[in-house]
Image (tube, rainbow, N blue to C red):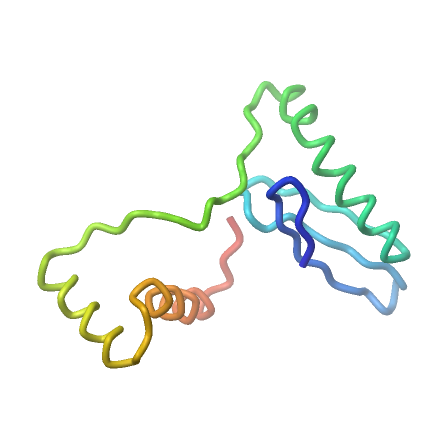
Length: 113
């Protein structure tokens, strides 16, 4: 994973094409890049992030901002109590426990925003 200006990417290597390719993962829009070497890949990532606002402007759209990693969940008091107890029983802080549970649940689906 690489980070540039708050944008995070996922990178894979295609051994058949002998090329690295990546995609920004923390926005809804699709930003992709590729390179034959690690340096070329890193530069392509930075260039793609830099070009993104101009690309959006040409489409008359605002660029997506990277996800912050925070969101609010509204629960009933009973749900809140149960979740607090479950996290406590697992020996984890509430935020860590919830993140693990959500990651596990999300892993059951092929989600692409």
